[in-house]
Length: 432
Image 1: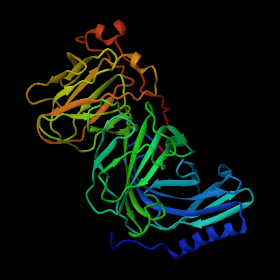
Image 2: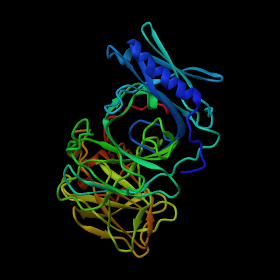
Image 3: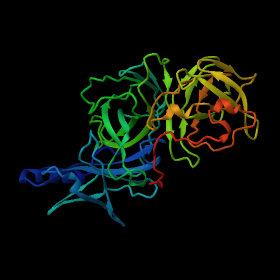
Image 4: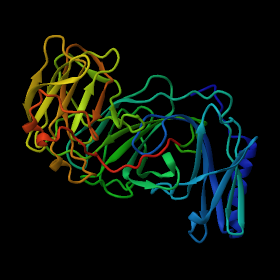
């Protein structure tokens, strides 16, 4: 991109030289790679607050390997001694970082101070200029191919950008003291520059950029970064980033017989009503089946987004519990039982379709492992062409009384009259 804040300040360049030169004197603490950029984040399951932020920090390593003993703070203007979080991801083992909402954080350089024992180091980040542009999100992420080498595909965002980077995170492994409530952020186990023009990527399990192999039954998040670089000809890394967006999509490795081109969601864990799976502009065509893949739960609410075409039909997956599900339709004020559907069967809604529906009937025995990532791949058709930007909400703590019209024998609960399960263990924490 052109006509933007390209060059690092002389103070920043000098600070990098200072950080590097100290290593020549066998210092116990080395600090370098300072960064500062505008950071736009989608909803996610990696325990990171969504929204528009300024993110800044540096890499700091101790000669004795005890990076955790290092403390770091940031100062700029009236903001003094703001603690940085230590987040030793697999791919960034010496990472210290902090984020602040973009509208309250000054755009200038930050002074970063690091201390480890008697040793101290100071480094300056670059500024981000007066008005960096937020980067757009990618949309329509899908996964094709069962096994350990699936193909990821997405729609490139509009607007100009310089680079893309694909990251894979292990959502079951929270690292460091940052994130929502200080509970850590999902570990990065893969990071690769994929070029600005990429709209697909084949995962190669033998790729040496993996710090650990992908495993069946684990929950992962794809993080696709779209970046405006400070220097267009420079590297696609944190130091050279001026502005970026981060689009997150959850996935698990699919079974060999999974449908092709399964769309995966952005997971929003910040909703007061519970976790919601959000689909971003999935292209749909009249009568064509689209498969969507959230993480398994005991039931789901499906709803279109504003302006989306109505659902025309739904096809149930197979191999989930006893393969018998209950369909409930919205009557304007509540969900009412409409039909029992077997796994693999398609239910066609009345003419004009519906804007929402609920599926129940996944047995508790299907969720013995709270970290289970068994896919519940649902086939949907739509009454007209357009895009699907709706939601699929897992019923993980559903305590609404079962409608009188719902056959209790089918719920597996007898006369209890309610459902109460959890998708996976997650502590409730205030937003960061």
